[in-house]
Image (cartoon, rainbow, N blue to C red; front, side, top):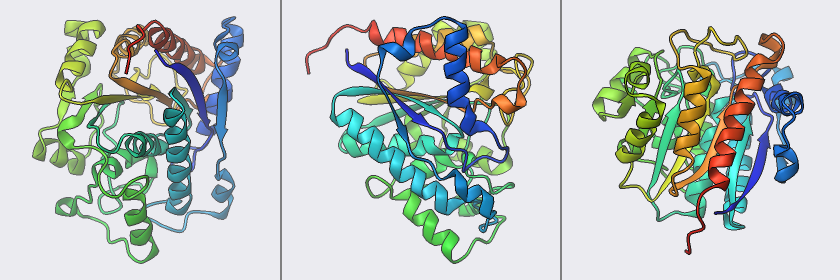
Length: 320
């Protein structure tokens, strides 16, 4: 069992809706309201953000604020790498989902020869690239960054110049080249897909667990199924976007989608996953209190985070 180090990433440079950078503090407030001592138990460190670039306006139409996104990927990568190097378990609280790629790059930088599996719990596949994105928002691209995808087959945009230079730099953050193989990826609760993303899912036969599977089999069994899909991997990273939760339960995220999992299912799913010894990092993203009432999403998110942390701390000590 490794000691947890909380990494705070108050960035929203990759989001389309403003406010996700406030999610970390909203979850801390929720912890006080719920009378939790989680933030007294574990040390935390904050990654400096570049949210001030948002005031300059987006220069790159097909990859908005890609210059700032690159900076954040590099900073998050380095912080995650250093915490793993110092033998901590990184528990990351982040704003928009784009910086999750920095987490993946940091794990690979620390363990370049180990095979990394990713469990991506989200309403969206986040498989777009500057060549396919309908919005230009970078939080729709982190999985494509991790896999090194361009997806020219589904090209609808024509990014040029600096946009392409930045995109190539992003794909090589941490260590050169792709950080994960498509077969080492498991999606859970994804239900808002575009044509270009569907193309990649089908091309690579990417593991896909639907909300209906959670309903049918239960969150605990789904966790076991997801882990079994990655039993060939040395390490596993779990990335949890709160919009995987059904939009009925809170409006407190930038891109809510109906027909998602419940808060209780999310809690069980994440806590069961975190019991597995191969899980080396866990992340929660996209809490946006400016879209919420009574901090409901932050409270739900914190409960999920605390349950996951308890599972991590309860894991038996394994000699390396």
